[in-house]
Length: 71
Image (cartoon, rainbow, N blue to C red; front, side, top):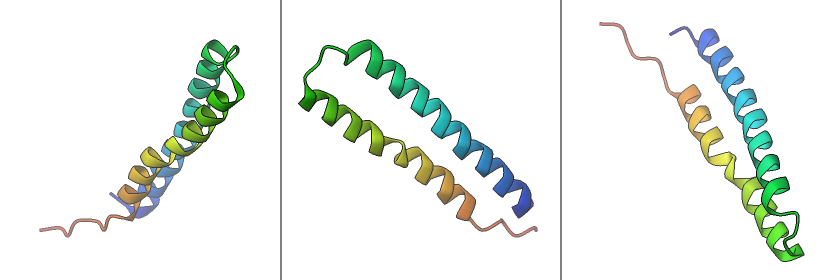
């Protein structure tokens, strides 16, 4: 796969990941955390604010892989 195409796909994947993850985390927070205490809300937002990094790292690692040599 050409490197430019791979970077384009990776960029769209990262943007989609952030948008979808933010929507899901926000919906969950509104539905479940409205009556929770401040500590629970703080821990949820701390955890959910860092959790998106794991799939993003996977996408970035895929972007950094060297292309396979043609045989």
